[in-house]
Structure formats: structure tokens, C-alpha cells
Image 1 (cartoon, rainbow, N blue to C red):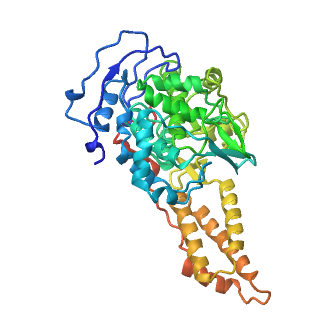
Image 2 (cartoon, rainbow, N blue to C red; image 1 turned 135 degrees about the vertical axis):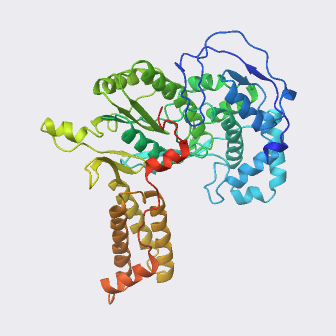
Length: 498
């Protein structure tokens, strides 16, 4: 393994720093140990490199997991040529180039020489980060999302460094944090949320979303948070170089006064570190000290859901959360954040007050609905594909079909089959079979219209179209297990959200 080729770690200095942002103990869940408050204290002697039989990142993980107050003073030597090579090979070969115009193929023509040169520049302090190239992509609400496309060498170095830092932060991050973490997918977050809503006394749900989260991260606070665990000044200087590199848009350079560029390899980790100290630790402490009933939390990047047993807890949490985020330059999206009555008793309680069915909420592409089992009428969490995502996907398919209209039918069918299979892989959850069948039908309609436009004298009717669809397009079937079952298997009885 790559870690086995690393030399042993340097000095690790356990120390307590002032940490006004941390505010509490972390939760022991899914391998996350308790994080102790970093109050002022005396520096203790570090661990020598020869004191452990482990080497490389394995030793970093062990120290990080067992000593939550340790600060790591020697990490850069883990960014060696082997790790840089692995980072290069993990990049998408067809990804858009940065401001330097260097593509993945171009860099690979003299890969070993380029990697050795990059490694040498990084370790002697001569590496200079290039500005990101800014592009915009449409957001679901019609606005444009700014992306920063880093230069290829910056992507390589960032990816390699993220792997090193993950050895530390994967032991720190709490169990309810799921976005952009190794071994954690959106379905793991969805399973945790379902298990929490069904297994806990949840009657109210706060569906929350940050407003321009990645563009609002305060650089000074971010560096303070990183310094709680990282004492290697070379690592911190690399991150500062990326933050100070700025962006180039239409030939003009602009500084990044706040935020991190979305699209950069290091941005998801930096965003998780910021949320860990600002939100996660604080939220865990709040429910431990202030809640009068069950509270469940699931966060995926800048999107999170909090379930409450009591409305009073939910309203107080929402108020305290706004104050907490304002201290660190963050705020909630007022249009997307809302408190709704949702859970096993929501339908009954609303009916008693003369209200309609419980509201629904969207999370990670699914609409969550209060349902009932057919036989016993017991509460059941139902998840259907978010209709907005279906419309966006079908619009994209329609546009692409117009471009592929005159290709041979087998090529069109193979492409549509890949689109449909990808849709099934994500959305084929229990209780969603009708939405899958509806998506397939609408896909067939778009295909039919595209084929009919190829000629004014077409003879393509629905009977023939059905035969083409049966030949090329797979029928829907459920691919995911029930969320409670899969989550129980993963956590092996540990709490999903506490």
C-alpha cells in the first residue's frame, strides 16, 4: 500500500488552544470519538517517530483518533511523488483545463518528470498557486452558480493533500456529517435520516439550507479552525496560497476575500471543516444541553435536516442557529429553510386541528412524505423522486436527443439506456417504482418525438415505439434495500443520528 512506503511521522504536539467556535463534545457515532473542548492549557510532550510500529498515514489516523487535542507538526512529507501520481490518475481526463490551459493528457506526456518537479517545488517552498478560472452553471432556482476551475497542478496537489488531511479529520467529523467524505454517499445520509425519523420521536422537521455557503466562508476563521489540528506551517501556507490565488473571469483577476472556489479539490474538505466547528459541534452540544426531547440531525455538505420531538425545541434551535451562524459570516437561505410538522403523529395531529395532510420536504433529490402501511395503517416514510429534478433531467435529455437525432437507432438506444440505468441506480428506492416507470415513459415520449422529426413521412407509431423501448430501455426495478435495514447493517446497532 502507499502508506507503507511512507516514512514515519514527525513530531506530533498535543496542545490545547482557545476554541470559542467548538462549543462542546462531539458524538461517538460510526467511529467518531468524543472531541474535547480546546481550552487554554499546557503543552504536553509529543510522540516520537519511533514510538509506534505504524508508519505513514496509518500512524496519523491512530494519533488523531486517540488524542483529540493533538496538533500535527509534520505532515507535508506524506505528499510524496507516489501520492501525487495517485492524485493525477484519480482526476477526470476530460475535465476542463484551468487558466494555464494544461490538460490531463498534456501533463501526462512527461508525467514522472512533471511530478518530480512539482514535488520539489512544494517541498522547497517555491510552489505558486494559480488563480482559478471562473465559469457559471445554472442552479435549480434559475440563478447561476460560480465554479472555480483550478489549474491541473493545483488539482493534483490539492487532491493529494486532502488525502493526507482526511486521515485526521475523518476521525473528528461527527456521525451525522455525510457530504464529500470517503465511504459516505448521499444514500447513506438518506438512510440515516429515514432511520432517525422512523425510529425516533420526530414530529417537526427543520429543512435548512445555507445561503451561498462556499462563497461565505471567512478565511480567518477557517485558518483558526485548521490550526486546532494542524501545526505544520507548510501545510497551512499551501492552503493560504489557494485561498489567496483568486479567480480570473473574462481576463480580469479578482481576489477571494471570502469563500472557497466551488469545483476545487480542496474545497469540500475545507467546507466540512468549517461546518464541523460552526454547526456540527454546536448542534450536538445544543441538543445535549437544551433539548427536551429527541433531536436527529443529518447534514450533507451545505444542506441539512433536523428533526425534533417538540415544536418548542425546533423554534428555539432555529433562533439560536441564526445567531450562531451570524457570528461566523453565515446565514440560512430564507426561501429554502422552513419548519414543518412531519412525523408519525403529524397526520393525526393536523386532522385534529382541522388541517390538511402534512407538508413534504426535499432532501438529496427525494421528496419525503408521511405515509401509511397498507395492512396496519402504521406510519411509513415514503420517498419519491423530486419532480423538479425529473423536469431538469428530461429537459437535458430532450436537448441531447435533438443533437443525436440522426444517429443510428442502436446508438440512440444505447445512450438512452445508460441515462435510464443511471437514474435507476440513484432513485430506485422502495416505494418509488411508480416514479421510475413514469420517468421511463416520458423518456420514451422524447425519443418518439425525436425519431418522428427525422422525416416528415415517418411511419413510427406507438406500437413500434414500444418494441424499440422494450429492446433498448430496461424496465424499472427496486435496487436499494429499505433504509432502516441498510443503516442498521452499516452502524451495527449504533445510533444513526446521535
